[in-house]
Amino acid sequence: MTTERENLGRAKRWVVKIGSALLTNEGRGLDKEAIADWVAQMARLRQSGIELVLVSSGAVAEGMKRLGWQERPDELHHLQAAAAVGQMGMVRAYESFFEQHGIHTAQVLLTHDDLSNRKRYLNARSALKTLISLGVVPVINENDTVATDEIRFGDNDTLGGLVANLIEAQLLVILTDQQGLYERDPRQDPTAALVKQGFAGDEQLEAMAGGSGGRLGRGGMLTKLRAARLAARSDTATWIVSGRVPSVLLKIAEGADYGTLLLPAQPKLLARKQWIAAHLKVRGEITLDAGAVQKLTRSGSSLLSIGVTAVSGQFTRGDMVSCVDSEGREIARGLINYSAEETLKIMRQPSHRIAELLGYVSESELIHRDNLVLL
Ligand SMILES: Nc1ncnc2c1ncn2[C@@H]1O[C@H](COP(=O)(O)OP(=O)(O)O)[C@@H](O)[C@H]1O
Ligand SMILES: N[C@@H](CCC(=O)OP(=O)(O)O)C(=O)O
Image (cartoon, rainbow, N blue to C red; front, side):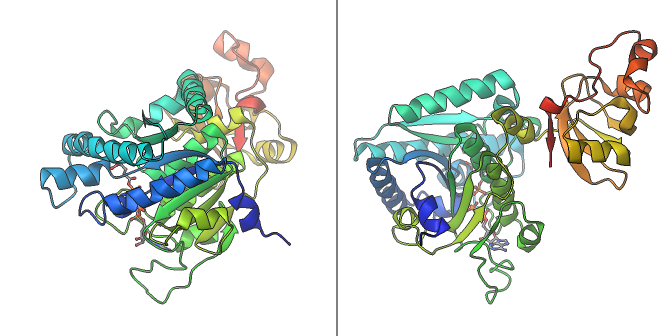
């Protein structure tokens, strides 16, 4: 009988994410030996027909090393400067190692803005798919030099999950400095047991994960689990595994029993809904009454103004808002058809009164079901 691991090892399209601590050998500078080794493995995978996209952290960590800084700076402009310096070394290393195997690489730097604008999202998707079809391995990182807090993914685990959605990968492999997810942070408790398999989005697993163990990156175990939750929306499984296991990527392709495998538990979302769900910047919150919650969750209906009891935040038509129940639990997200001010005027009112209350009607639904994603 074939196991899930064996099936996933045969997946055709992978996103591989490599974290800062691993790539820079805990900040000692780019670990060229390790990079050459991962690249050699990826070249073998490509030869066996697997399509690959690489999401690599390490620009800030490598920049810090080159600039002689011991501590990760707090100021944004210092981080941006370090990233700009370090990114050069990183892409140079990848390019020269992949070249030895006759494989072209491409540098792709993204900000959250690029993926939250529908047109730029579609552009990024077709550019990546074209690169893949040309046999090129794209090397993606956040565009740290221009990213402000407003337009930041924040960590590359999240970026990895979103890229998996973008290219509809079957597998997201997160290489890190631990063997996988442990029941507790192994840096705090070395006796903690490894979790071998679970479901993406399982809150019990998320409760086991702590923040970043290092001073180099921004992620941590929780961001990896959240990335798995994001990836699951495109039916992508996530494998969290140590990059220090010899031939780790080749072993995964054989379905070996390493690390933590997180399987998607929900049905795949339509591509447009994945894009909606991936919006990280929520502009406001609307509270729904019990009837509206039931309509949305049981019948997949659109949200009407009559079911809304409260509005908070500043949003305009087309913005992403979070829909919560009367206890404050988020149940859905969607692109709203009315601004916060308009929503305040029409909440608790039936749709046929919108014209009378506002003097015009944009749409009869507050959020159309095609623009609504249940969480
Ligand atoms: N439950 C857990 N299991 C494993 N690692 C954990 C857990 N909770 C927190 N961590 C920490 O997360 C770190 C990995 O995240 P991070 O340092 O961001 O790595 P990367 O640079 O690979 O993204 C580990 O070194 C570990 O200290
Ligand atoms: N874009 C940043 C990535 C920061 C980050 O998320 O790091 P990590 O938690 O190690 O994956 C960089 O290249 O330094």
